[in-house]
Length: 223
Ligand code: BG6
Ligand code: MG
Image 1 (cartoon, protein in one colour):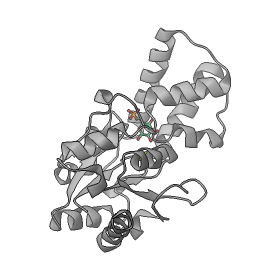
Image 2 (image 1 turned 120 degrees about the vertical axis):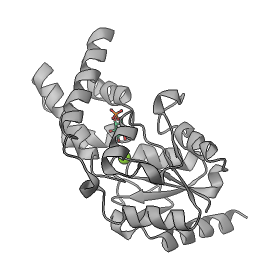
Image 3 (image 1 turned 90 degrees about the vertical axis):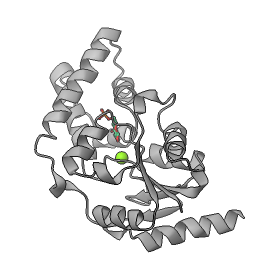
C-alpha cells in the first residue's frame, strides 16, 4: 500500500448526520414536508446538488434553476452553522493514530471528499498537515459513485489507484473506490456496505497493520 484516500464526512469526523439534519430543516421550512430517515443513504457521499436532486425527486417537486440554487446555498448555510464548534475533539476514534501510522510508513494521504467544505473542516479538525493532496470536487467531472474523485486523488499522489486503499462510510463512495480499482475499506454496517473489500464497524478498528494486510490480500489475489 502506497496511498490512502479518505472520504471526510462520516470517516474523519461525524459530520455526515449534520448534512441530513440541514436538509430536513430546509425542506421543512420551504415545503412543510418531512424527509424520511431512509433517504439519508441516497444523500451520503454525493454532492450537494445531487443530494438536492435526489430529495426533490423523492418528494416529486419541481423547482426553477434559481430556486434550486437558493435551496442549495441555504442548506450549506444551515450545515455550516452546525460546524461552528467543530474542533480536533470531533475527530473520530482511531483516525489520528491511523494517519500518524500511515505517515510513519511513508504512505501518502489524500482527501477524496465530495464536500466543498473539505479544506475548512480539515483545518477545524487540525488534520490538514497529514494530507499530501486534497481533491477539489468541483473540478471532477462525475461525482461518486463514479470513480473520478478516487482516480484524481491517486493521480494527485502520483500513484496507481491499485496501490491505494480508500476509506468510506457511503454506498456511493464504496462503489467509487471499487470502480477506481483501489481497495475499498467500509466503515459502517454490513447491510449497507456489502460491496466493500473489507468492512469495519467503527473507525477505532482501523489499524495500519490490518489495512496493509487487506491491501496485500487483494493485491496477491489479483497477481
Ligand atoms: C459528502 C457528504 O461528503 O459531501 C454528502 O457525504 C454531501 O452528504 C457532500 O452532500 C457535499 O458536501 P458539501 O459540504 O459540499 O455540501
Ligand atoms: Mg462520507
